Length: 141
Picture 1 (spheres, rainbow, N blue to C red):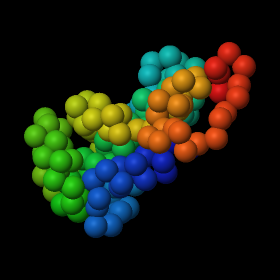
Picture 2: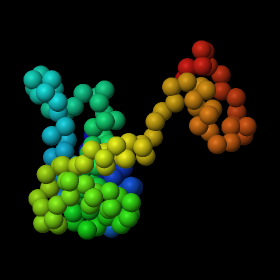
Picture 3: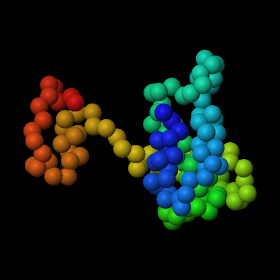
């Protein structure tokens, strides 16, 4: 639920030549590191589902950092962003799941966000006049 969507998002963004085992391992380490103190105290294995968007961005950022470390990321924007962070380290660095908060924040900007109301849905459609009328109560989807 957490790892594979983050791998997909990270791959779409940084466009690696291929996905390596160590990139998957870095995402897995980031998932293990993502538990907050409350989740650890409750003995949970995974972050609460309410945090899925936050954690997904973090995991995708860890993927991007590892792809840059391995020199397989091809999108210059993400390469530059990861390399300019304090997390950037040599190509030989073992995957640790670390990421720069700046990279995670930028990943969030590219994530899909569902509409909460009919008005938000209409505003998000580029050519709404071509779409059939959608009816709902109170404008909620």
